[in-house]
Length: 425
Image (tube, rainbow, N blue to C red; front, side, top):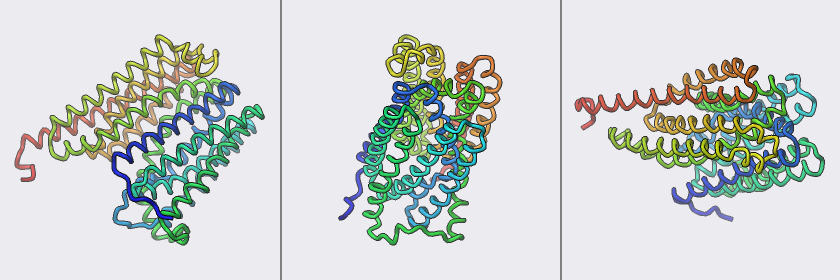
């Protein structure tokens, strides 16, 4: 059985958007199921598990998939990537297990945290096969895997919670779903691409792995900071207000993802053009496209805030339960935070297009310091609303820093254009 030829850029983009959209919808569907069939506490337990596991796995993943997909010179073979991913995933699972056991959580919550970590570990192994598919320009295989994983995990979690009235069986279903897709589809596609089972055997050659780790370590650190900044308010909500309040916050906050997904899809499309304009020294075209991008994101942010103001209670009641509708103000302020973060994302794409990479690390570090300080300051007095305002503060700081970097990049470009002697002939 042979793999089909590589897909076009347009087809790959279409598959990528569809797969990620369906998967994100199914992830949100799991929160809806827990809210409808279970309780806010169950939602909070799942949210806490994800908040603990996600930054750890993001770091140990080392953004290996991106490095793998762009390894056009084949400096490393798939077995090298697989070997490193298995080691790093095992370390991540060990850290998650230690945290779940030593964090002072109730036994059920500890088990949920570990099971979520196990699911993320399986997802991490699938990710290295996604890198292989991406390297061979077969994003359709990744999208199909995400769709299968999304629907199957939603189905099994729903059955587990409905039959047992316990989140434990629901999360167990999630682990089973991701294991089935990994074994029956992702590994199978890897065999089709590599054609020989021997190439699926992981390599653990110390010099090669050390070199690969050194190459990927900064990327893993950045991704950990991104994930950590997204989850910092959840840690403090669980600490100060408990799992039930965390569940309400997490369910409402997930609605921020919908607009973010659209902004990211648009960002993936405009990034090559921004990079092209910047490399060509065309500051006017760069500014014009960036302003249009920011304008669309601002319009989207303003729209979701308006919708939350006008129909927030009805939306929360329909999607979740009436008790969630009591937090309409929280919904509005979270959408304000979302709108600001959409603009920040636009500026982030512009920074990347201008190849401003290193500066992003201290920026994320600054937000990682500001966010917990804001949470400690606001949560004890304002409750969940304080967490939303902390998100707004963090998003605003991130946006201002991103804007400063973009202005600097444009000033640099203008200066270069004003001095023709610095330009290549």
